[in-house]
Amino acid sequence: MSLRTERTARLLLVFSVASVLSFAIRVPAIAVDDSPSYLEPARSWAAGHGLREGGRPLESRLPLYALALGLVIRLFGDAPVGFSLLNSACHIAAVLLVRDVLRRRVDGTIADFTAAAAILYPPLLTSTGLVLQESFLSLLLALFFWALWRALESGDTAWSAAAGAALGLSALAKVTSLPLAVPAAALVALARPGMGGAREWRTSRPVRVAAFVAGAALVLSSWAIRNDRVLGRLEVTNNNGGQTLLGGTVSNTITNWSAFPEYLAARQAWSESEHSVYPVLDRYLYVVAWRRIVAAPGHWLTLVVERVGRFMLPARHGLVARGLAQTGTFPPWYIFETAVNAALFAGAAWSVVVAMRRRDAALLAAPLIVFGHHVLYAVTYVSPRYGVTVGPVLIAAAVLAIARPPARAVSER
Image (cartoon, rainbow, N blue to C red; front, side, top):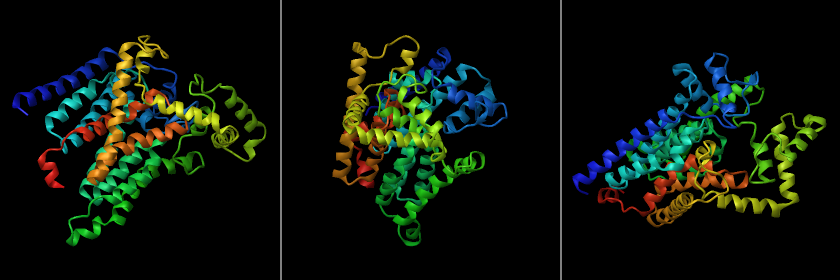
């Protein structure tokens, strides 16, 4: 492309970054229903009391976003603008990581235009204005995508370990990342061989997979050891997965997760008799949820199909929280964004076909993350805002599927 086009793309990228930071300053983040579950432990940690909620050690949330908020509070004070700047910085960094991957396969100008559009894409941008962890998660998943891509392209043991560590970090923010470990390890095993000679033993498939698993285990072990010492349980999950699965057998529109009738009934049964068999309430809720699925599989499958459709809906929770939009309505701008989201998902699906045709394992990294997350949400519970977490990677998958790689990228392979 012409030098003028390249400069235009670069200037647009700079403008998009400046616009997001300006948005963060002018529109400070606001707290919504789930925000206290992050802010309370964050404020406790910032005050030097450790991650605590309701006077007890944190166990209903994983620690990473609360720690990030706590660091902001400790360094800059407990101000909403600090939280919005944190979310905005995470959003920008996630897109720039994706941009780096794109530049390895497509023209740099296309990568810059794509990054600028992704940074300003309203469902991703407006999500930074709430004290919720979706933008933070998008950074961690973009980091995982970036490291996994490098591991798959290079076949290098160090990059395989880095990809595992990035997966571990994302799982310390939300456990939905953890099931990606198995298919990601399988992809690492498919990476092309190493350089041969003295390096060959370090780049063999078993060694790469072991490095990936070790990287993830090393990161996760810190939280597991903490839980063992503080809670008496060697675990890395948060303790609301069973509640989420139970809610996903009831409805896709639960408004109060602490008071829907099925949860209250299960909690009462646990308190009266089941706690002797299931010492942790959330473990019992998994059992109740499974019983409901077995008793009425048709109802559950209907909810699953409905959740699959909800994946295509772009996030507007930031606008709803500010009274600028209303759920259940489809104004023209929202229909347009929905069409864009559907096209992005179609592009991500097509990237799987392209990867198989080219026998290119690296191209499978993005759809693995996008669809791996959404399969898990389909069987549990989904909100359109969850799509924010894979937004930058989703955009990358679509672009990689349709963009023609430059000659140098083809020759390198």
